[in-house]
Length: 149
Image (cartoon, rainbow, N blue to C red; front, top):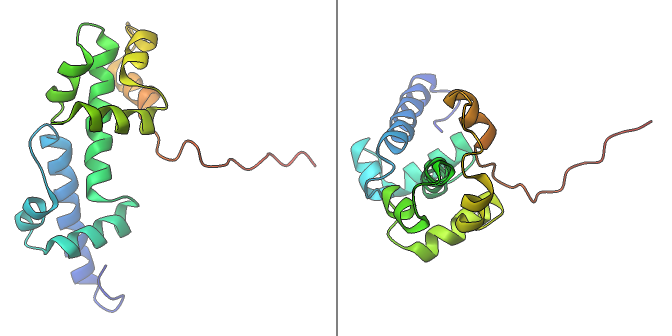
């Protein structure tokens, strides 16, 4: 971010980062890359990458892939979409990369997820279904044991 002595620049940078994040959320299925996103907010790709990671805790690419996987999860839960169709619908161009990232984020393959979760949120309000099914990064990170003393 900007130096602590320049809060106006820091606020401008944060606003630009929000615009990038909003564009990813809106246009996740479109071909997006850091260069194009950076150009859209008048930053260099390197500066955008560093600032985005500092502000949101993950890279631009990771954020984009998390949004794509999140949308693919919703499609697969419906049960009427194949894994391949879900992959291409959310903007991924490689089924292999999609499956690898899906497995990393969700903890199981897209096909296994579809089998186990198909219609799992039927009848559930969509706002609740999104919260319950949102992929969580670093699920494998160690969880501290509760203090029983």
